[in-house]
Amino acid sequence: MSEATYIAARAKLARQKAAAPWLLMLPALIIVLIFFGLPTAYMARMSFNLHEGAKLYTPGFTFEHYANLLSNEVFTTAIWTTVQLSLMASVATVVIGYAFAMLVWLKPARWRLLFVGLALCPLLISEIAIIFGWWMFFPKNGLLSFALMSSGLITEKISLMYTEFAAFVGLVYVTLPFCFFILLSILDGLDKRMLEAGADLGASPLVTFREVLLPLTRSGLLVAFSQSFIWTMGTYATPSALGPDTLWTMGFLIQEQMLGRSNWPSASALSMVLVVGVAVVIIFTRSLSAKRATLHV
Amino acid sequence: MSDASTPLTRRSMEPTVFRVLTLAFTIFIVAYILIPILVTLVMSFNDASQIRFPIKVWSVKWYSDFFGSPQWTEALVNSFIIALGTAVIATTSGILAAWAFERYDFPMKSALYVLIMMPLFMPGVVLGLGVAIAFGGVEIAGYNIYGSRGLVMIAHALWAMPLVFMLMEATFRTIDNRVVEAAQDLGAPPVRTFFEVVIPMVSTGVISSVLFAFVISLNEFVMALFLTDRDTQTLPVLMWLSLRSAGTPRLAVASVILACTGFLCLTLIMLWYIRQLRKVAR
Image: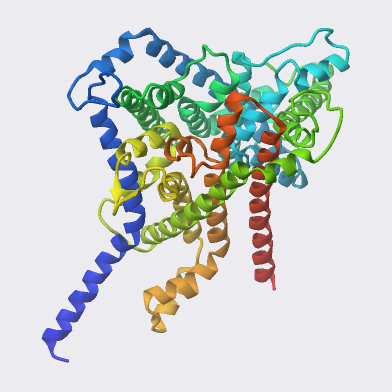
C-alpha cells in the first residue's frame, strides 16, 4: 500500500469515527427537532397571529394575546389559581413523599419490595383511570359517603366531589411516585448509622431529623419539589375533572381555547407562558442545587 | 431542646409515640394509594348501570358489554397499535443516542443532552398543541398525517424517548468496556459488536425501555386527545370523553384492562431481571 492511499484510508476512518455519533443520534435528533423544536417555533409564531371571527387564526403580528393574559381576568385568575394549586400540591407531595421514602428507608429490607411495588402503582395506571377512581370515591353515592354512613360517623350522605380538596387529592396522587423515587434514591445514598450517632449524642429524633437528615437531603427535596411543581403546572385533566367548575387552570384554558373556542393564537400564547415557566423552574433548581454542591465540596 | 439531662420518662415515651405515628402513616399511605385502584376493581363487577355504593348485584355484565362494543374494542386496538409503535420508535432512537453519548466524544455534548431530555419536562398539553398546530394541515402524498396513528406514536415518543435515553445511558455506563474492546480487537466491526456483544449485556435495560415506552403511550391521553380523530381515538381518550358525559361501570372495565396491561409489563420486567440474575449466578 502506498503512503498516499494509507493516509487517505486513515482520513476516511477518522471521518467515519467523527460521523458515527451523529448518525447514531440522528433518529433522536429528528424526533426532538422536528416534532418538538419545530412545533415550539410554530407555537411562538402562532402566539402573535390575529384571531378574527370563526377562523382558527389570521396571519399577522400582535401582542394582543399576551396583553390579554395580563389584563383579562379569566386568564390572570387562571394563572394565579394554577400557581397556587401547584404550590400547595407540591408542598403536600414533598411532605408525604418524604415521609413515605423515610418509612421505606428505615424499615427492614423485606418490606422494601412491597412498598416500592405500592409506589409504582400510580405510575403504571393511566391518569384517566386515577381520576375515575377518585370520581367514584368522593360523590354522594360514592364509597367515602357510604363507608362513613355505615360506620355511623355521619347520618347524611356527603359529597366531596367537585371541590378543591378532591382536585388536590388527585393531583398529589399523580405526582407522589416521582417524588418518592427521587427522595428514596437520595436517602439510599446516606448511611443509616448517622441517625444512631445522633441519638447516641443525645439528640431527640426530631432534632436528628432537622440537624442531620434535612441538610443532607436538601438538594433531593429541591429536585422533588420542582418536579412535582412542573407536573402540576401542566396537568389539566385531574383538576378539571375532580375540582369545581370554577377551578380553571392554565392547562385547562389551553385546551379550552384550542378545542372549545378554536382560538389557536391565544392557546399558543398561554402555552408559551407555560413553556417559559417550566424552563425558569428547571434553571432555577439547577442553579440552586449547583450552588449547594460547590458550597459543600 | 433535648440534652443529656432530659428526664428518663420522656425518653422512654418517644419510641412509643414514634411507633404509633409510623403505623398511622403506613395505614394512611397504603389506603391512599390503594383506594382508587380497589374502587375501580370492585366497580367493574357491578351489575347496575350507575356508579353507586353499596353494590347490590355482582356480575361480569360490563366486561361482556365492553368486548361486545365495536367502539370500545376499536379504541383498545388503536391504543395497542400506537403503544407498540411508540415502543419501537422510542427504544430504537433512545438506545442509539445513548450509545453515542457513551462511546463517543463530540462537540456540544451537554447542550445536546439537554435538548434530548427537554420534551420530557414539557406538559402534555403544550406538546400536543404544538404538534397539532405544526402538522395540522400537512399532507404527505395525499395522505393526511393529522389524525393518523403515526403522528400520535411520534408525539408519545417525545416523552418515551428521553426516558429510554436516560435509562440506557445509565445502563451502558455499567458495562465492562474491556469486553467491548476485546470484541473490536478480535476484528468485529462496530455494528456487529453493538448487536452481538453490547445489547445482550444490557438486555434488562432494553426490555425495561420497551415496556416502559409501551406503558407510557398506552396510558397517555392529553396529546392523544389533541391528535386523534374519531377513527384513531385511543382508549384513554374515549374514557375521558365519556367521563365528561356520564360515568358507567364500563369505564371501570376499561380502567381495569389498562391497569392489568401495565402490571403485566412490570411483571415481565421483574421476571426478566430475575432470569438475568440467575444467569449471572450460574
